[in-house]
Amino acid sequence: MTNDKYGNDKEAIAVYGEIGFPQNLYIVGTVNMDETTFPFSRKVLDRANTIEFNYVDLGLQFTESLDAVKPYEAENSFLMSEYLVLGRDCQKYFDVIGLICSQLESINKILQKANAHVGYRVRDEIVFYLINNNNAGLLTEEEAFDNCIMQKILPRIQGSSASIKTMLCQLFESLAGQKIDANAADISTTSAMQKILDGGNVTYPKSTAKIKFMVQRFEEDGFTSYWL
Image (cartoon, rainbow, N blue to C red; front, side, top):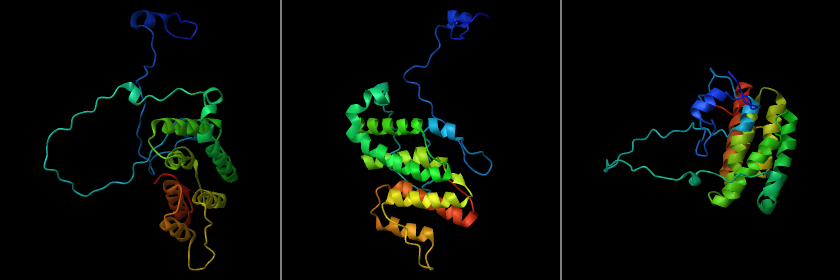
């Protein structure tokens, strides 16, 4: 067997042609997260967007029409995003990403206290997510950044040390824009968080609700993680 300078099998290339990834190839995977599985490593989370599907509606739904749903035919351009290089292509989007990068810096300072801070890869992927969302006009900037926190930041957090709870509480306050008032003896931290969430004036409702769940799990079990 002979290889080319890239390590490819020349005989295989001669028979099958160049082997590569077409533009319309998208990699999506599913995994069950429970006590029988190991959590994702941070380097996996840095390279993937994790979307949680835990809430189901068990109510029965009936329809009078039994006609088959016709498939929607879409070209690859419907899914394909623009290829961006941060230092070269993103200057014109500064109004979109400047404030978010500032928020990421503030969030990262909180995450550092529990050694859960993110690096350049996560920052870049969040920036690209927001730019593509802006170009497509799918979500508001707040909704898009809320998704980014859920998909790229919170899944990294797990542990049983007191610093984890402290960090989660500070992260909640940062994202909610309000202080947690749990000084009274008759109110727990999670109850104070829920009171803020019930007020409805929260910029990032998904992320703050998830953090509240993670703190509640810490208080009940002495350990917490993003996954149920």
